Length: 364
Ligand code: UD1
Ligand code: UDP
Image 1 (cartoon, rainbow, N blue to C red):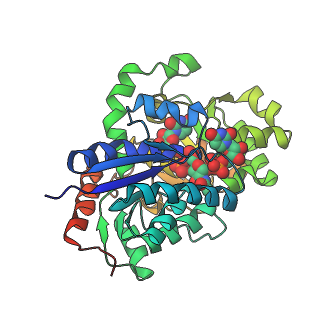
Image 2: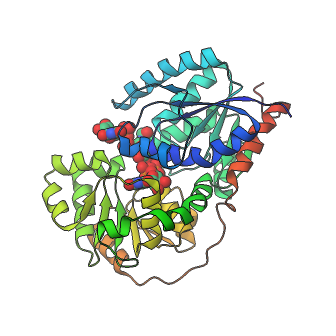
């Protein structure tokens, strides 16, 4: 079997988690060059994942940092273009829907290597989300679309994308399964935070729609403050900045366990032991589902509709009353169908990459 040169581009926290199972599986059959764009640069958003998950050290670090999105993406594209020109990979592999994802997909589409998109076909149908723009355009650049669910395959078909689509399942399920036991054994986060299993709510908030809109942010904070259980909120730096900017920081930190972002093992341990999860994160909604913790989603829509349809996730938007009601409502145990695969998505992603050898997905 021919070994391919695959250039993987990551840059933001969820992509380090997704790369963890895929990179290991990929390196068994192909050559991987790893590029970190530097979209996330704080130690707790980046380095901690490389250390805990023993991710390979990036071969290139583009040190792009934060900027308005178009500028950030332009800088990424300029720097990535040199890397792609120098490495001449057979394929460029990207994850999810961040600015790093689209920047790399566009550079590859212009330079020639095949584009592999892991977590393809997700849609919120909300074009105001920067992630929706990123994921739709990336799917349309991609030669190989690795879809986590049947619904994602249908979404692609509805946009005319039928060639090169593989139903792989979700690589984040692989990641959770790979660390769950280690998190149980090694994490001391419950003792560190002084919370007991089943007796706290775990919350995360970082979506632009919530942090950049003071009306929504007030509602989210009031909703979390209204819950009778302790609420642990490991806060993304943009959320801390927004709380300060809108005069909410004192109120929030007085009553919530507001802490720094956590490493993956501690975070998985908290998801598994929380009474409820409240989040606007895509990845955290799924992790709550995998670890069978009911989730309340602080958004008006979700890409992960299956979690809602089978009763494990409730969409509440940003309404304080709805947030409290949903977090305090008794939970009726639901079925737990394997809607995102069986935890071996990384192998299927590598199978899909390997098909490039025979030219099945090659660009005309
Ligand atoms: C990005 C992704 C989002 C993903 C999230 C994961 C886009 C459009 N958004 O959002 O889809 O869910 O990552 O966490 O790509 N900042 C720091 N330190 C860092 C990085 C960022 O303080 O290491 C602050 C900066 O003030 C920056 C702000 O966070 O302006 C936003 O960063 P940005 O990279 O634009 O997007 P995220 O909100 O992190
Ligand atoms: N995560 C973490 N520590 C935290 C918050 C999240 O390790 O304090 C992990 C979480 O387990 C998931 C990923 O980060 O795997 C999700 O990233 P995020 O919510 O930032 O992005 P999204 O999934 O919304 O794109």
